[in-house]
Amino acid sequence: MLGQKVATLVYGQQPAGNHRVQWDARGFSSGVNFYKLLTDRGFTQTRKLILIQ
Image (cartoon, rainbow, N blue to C red; front, side, top):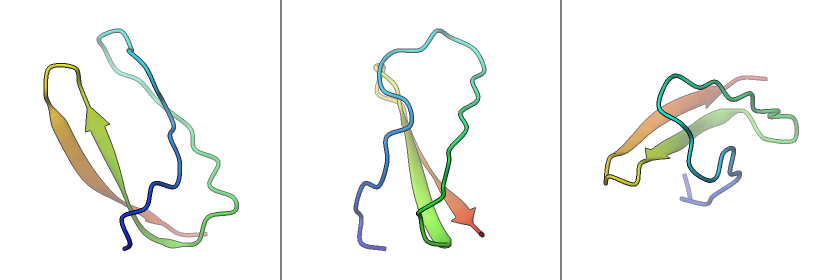
């Protein structure tokens, strides 16, 4: 866990609602990763993602 950014999946504003993003993780090592959700209203959420290949 070095704190390095490995990919940006979505950049820019999205309309309100539910969204789904597919991530082609080929080329990434298996293990624990984190993803962060940010809003323009100051909400930030970081969650754990376990990649098993």
